[in-house]
Image (tube, rainbow, N blue to C red; front, top):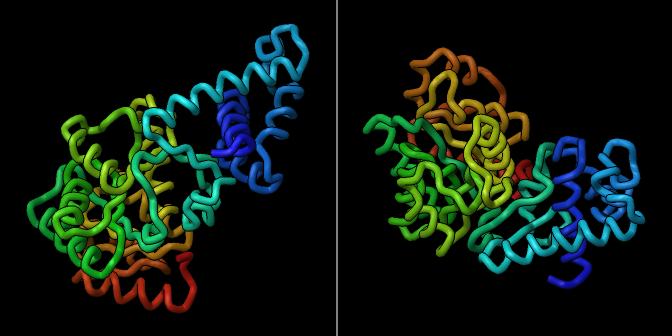
Length: 302
């Protein structure tokens, strides 16, 4: 990372730490202006920040330099730990994700994303999955892998774990989008799987590396996974599940959603099935046929 890029990354990290606006608002501002440093300077000089603590009775530029040096040291430590910090200004920031309105201003990556990951499909579902649901998740992931798609999921127990492990067993690519920082694993029993995916492919988080799991982080993770992928497949999900939420978010992102036919036993799925952008499927082939039809007409990002 060159000096300018390092300074801009440190500036964005500092901005997110001290700023008062939603993170998505900073993603917009940074992309519009092409710089995080200038926005940070405005925040430091503005009334929304606690200038007494930030400036510590010193000149603005001295306070700015101190803040940037401390933040750059954190970025260096993350990099030494093998984590990439990709801001919305970084050429490696995923283009699919860049296209959605609620994209995070930065993501952390353990491992390496490749251009092939633009052809990714999320396979998600219940943590307490049925044997039938697990089998169908594995069949979908195997099919996607054989067709050259990256399988994305959230590294949760149940359907997510089945999707990741089936992709690995099929020799395909899989990417995990998690609801904690990259230095943590949730659930703990998936720590080894997380390490393997990071070593061979990529694990992505929008949270500070030491961030714990919370009720707030998982819905945010679902939004990022939806934005990263061409489509979302919901295998099993309850009325209150994060997978149902991801289906809603994917529709907001203009990405197709595939519901397995067995979900129609539930009222929420029957309601969703009537919405534009939702397709009920019975086989993995229906998923790839629909996605390939949509991507060939340039209606999706990749």
